[in-house]
Image (tube, rainbow, N blue to C red; front, side, top):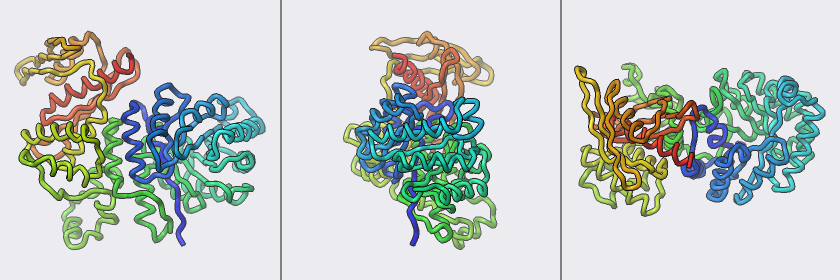
Length: 504
């Protein structure tokens, strides 16, 4: 009989710690709802005490999500635990996730505490958290570099204090699969009461072994795995949910493990997270990369045409990729559009459908055929909508290889139109300079990415920018259009409006 593994997703917490990623509450809610649809068992919605914004986002997710346990991370400190409980207390299934470091290097240089002091604090804080809710997870930070004998002691103490899940993090991605598997095995064999709790693992990817270490842990008794969509996270990121899940699914004959994930939601979840975080997925990324099911070699193509399993160990359909079942264009009606949204898995209210349909009609006038990826881009653009202090009225560009690029931008602010012109090194630079003059603010473009949503000369272009002011934190902006200059202008304004909304 196969055993079931729990999937703990920390995209909204550890994933958001990816440098340059800054999600607002609406975006976190959208990702949370998609994670619920994906079928994760636990979602870590944030670190409640880290900021007021994180606290409010966790609170909003806890109130919205009904079928998934919602957790907040907190240090082994009373005020952290109090704040975490305030954030998750309205969840249908709340969890407090507390941690303290257990490696010699962390205890000596960061905590400046002895082993006994750390053990005493851990047990006391688990007991303190237990007064709030029954589901308490305890993490031994940097367990991968901790003495196993100390881990046995501290895990026994926190289990006795009421922990329902113990987590073994490879916090800095230091271990190898053989080492990490043995560490998990040793904990399972030497910790009194371990059979009463879930054994969780949280692996980082600093040496590129997060997924391998996670799977090694599963083979040695782990019952919960912590991961993120697209492997997002600190430094080199975390174990990738889609890679771990599809390894367990594709090699079910080897692992004999089941899970609750609806794998057909994997691709859409990956695209949503990539779009909202502004972190693009590399083409050769396993499972969800653009090339994951692409075959260029003649030998491979011949094999695929005769029998797909010659070069595909999993099907595109298994992760939610499929051919278009219906061609949509400018003559398509609302009913066909709504049906297509439902087929794609979207559940939108009427106002959202109306707005998406208007954008679809505008796009259909420019493109002969609107594809699924175009519709997905239109729908997901609405998630990033924030109060628009500045709105684009019009833009005009003069550019060429023998002239200095010039842009004229008209912006609306509080029913007043501002017009400014500027030059630049190319049309995009000129447009951005004109926008900065119009708003009276000098900004730094930290990052700029342009990709075609679909193929063809009429492809919808998606631009993602990261903008910062005076060396401050970057804000992500996103814009889509068949005109890449317009998409760039929309993205720049989106980032500026996001920045201004947070300042105000």
